[in-house]
Image (cartoon, rainbow, N blue to C red; front, top):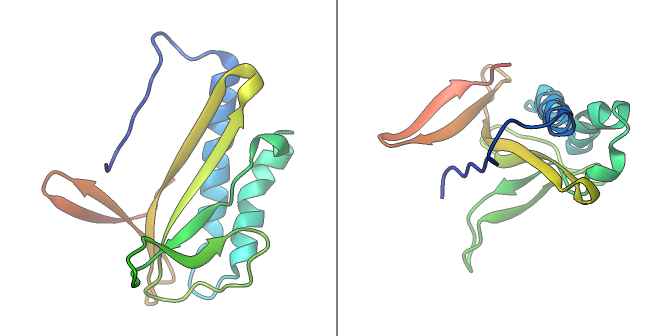
Length: 143
């Protein structure tokens, strides 16, 4: 599955809009820290700043991302964990999936925003990999 969209009937309420806005800020703040040579813990800490400012620290229960790799026996996750406890460093050629996931079970609300990215050495920028019907497309991260 490359895309999954769920949308309830009707317009989202104020609480859902606020949760989405904070998740989007979190994703962009974390991605801002992603570059070749970056410490993984700094990436997760950067993604948490908008969440903490909004007073939603309890709503963020997951790491910011995971590495994607190949191995035998086959697994799709590498040992790279993008969280505030990791000691890893991003290097050119690494691929990973990141997401900002906020959940408020008491309100019946949750949002997850993210994507798959590749670390590029030449420009020290990330390239987002997204699927289309014609195959993968590449583009720089845009706000």
